[in-house]
Length: 404
Image (cartoon, rainbow, N blue to C red; front, side, top):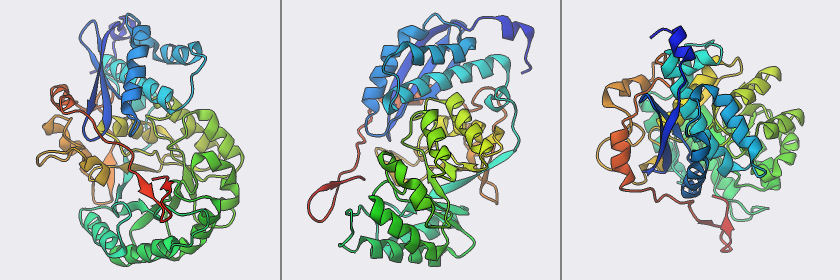
């Protein structure tokens, strides 16, 4: 479908916005124009999605009756109009609406989102898969990693460690190293392995693990400390040759700019749904490109968030790799039947779009808008089941709750 003068000049008036909370843990929305054109978005904030849905509903009247072609003005206006306009809940609600606007404009003009952003510079994007369960032992982690590699993955990510005390005296560091060594032995030297610290370490143990896990040649260390302690990342980056990655819990472009300025990170991992949407993620990508570092969006979410991120990576010189959550243990929560929950909300004839090639890449969609076909009827059926996923409680041996 080619761009026409009429498509560019005809208003795309927003008529309705519907939300749905669906298994395993996602918030999805459909925005519809008066002419019946649908745009889809996602507002997932894992474990707190109900509160984000409330914000989406609060923001909905602002968008109704407006022209979707003015998506930047609409989203920036919503941000600036609110005195309290930062934080993950606001950013996630905004992201769901913003992605749907891009989807509508792309469909109306017959253009994929990456072309609306200026055009892709790559035809496909490498992906990494999750392996290693959650705190499973060395043998179980090795077995799962080998299975995922047998399915075609050439790059993996797994939790680096169990929750650790500020100074580990419970054997957690030894457990982490033995587990990492078992996984490396199981998958061989040609498979890349990233380690997600998941913010489970305070600064002293993050520094120690950064050294001790080097024995298995990691691809990167993700979130060595929780974002509250990002001021320590320059020191951690200075004691290891492994690239430092972070960003999933950062909700403004300014946070990324500050961290890059401090030289505390080598791989930026904005979560498109947590940082306000496509435009903000593209701005983070531009920061990465301007500073000679990499972009690798965080995305253990639905195909809507994944595909939106794929468009940003496709057009960014800094774009490198994407997290792909198909098969991840989190997404088994509430799953039913034989269909992988990652594919459930897409029309079956389009599932092949997410097949990887022999080099663990996924092709960039060329269809209009997001380029995917969302099965909203299945979304509505699933919404009757609801979304019950919550943060997982984890305890240290002394009985205190730990960051999961």
